[in-house]
Image (cartoon, rainbow, N blue to C red; front, side, top):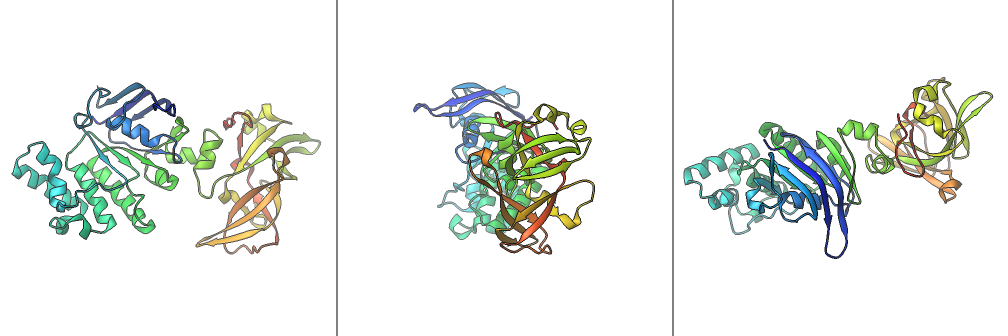
Length: 377
């Protein structure tokens, strides 16, 4: 059993910096869990505490049902893969892969069999005689992975292992790593600051901010139902748009006011989203993902509200155009708030052009303006 359970983890450094606060997380046996957050949020500290490279201020860490707090790193039965490959430059690939087994005094026959098996899985068979300097970045990363795999640990800890690779190779290695994890049925706690990596790789995603866990859920749930404004803004690229809004009721129905414009809402909107009822006639934060804008001409007549915008900048990115504009938002403390809409390149959009886009009210997220928590869906 390779389950990792972290309970009540706190870490304060001698200089007073609080890295982790009341951190609880359970990684199931055979699960690929991704811990994601901005630089400095504490995610690598979590990994180092689990590995035994840092001692937590308080809290309990168990691996495979065994409390490991007082065990040195080599006795925790964990393998760690670092951002830097940390290969021995004077050793061949074979010697790098075999090193940990030699330290455990395994027989030569056992070492050769284990290295050959791992090399075949990772496509390293033809490189076993080479030194790290003779390998590409992707090949070096495979060796670093192989060195961890050959030990057959209870679980793997991975600290941004793909961040040194170029974009194309990073995509390729993500796929290879996922295939390998499924084949090995390995438990993996994977740290990254890249939310694309998090969404594409994790069985579940844990979002960390300022040392506190914000949300743990499958990728689709993290994206569609973020727990708070931080998660909503951090997960997704381009990021979610936010603006101060107000739900009002008039003689002709229910409306959403924001950005100096009034959008009509379905009459049963508050019945479908009762969590918004306490916010009627009060300010709240509306969140709109860029891909949820569509041209007004393509909107269904009854559902969406129509927003009139002035195009400022258009970025052409392959199959999509990112159309940048801004809306008045004096309640936020600034005159205007920048927005971006992801539209099909067939939609005519040029700078200084007036354009109408539609919004499906069911896709709008709402957040409490004081706490940042999501209003119930």
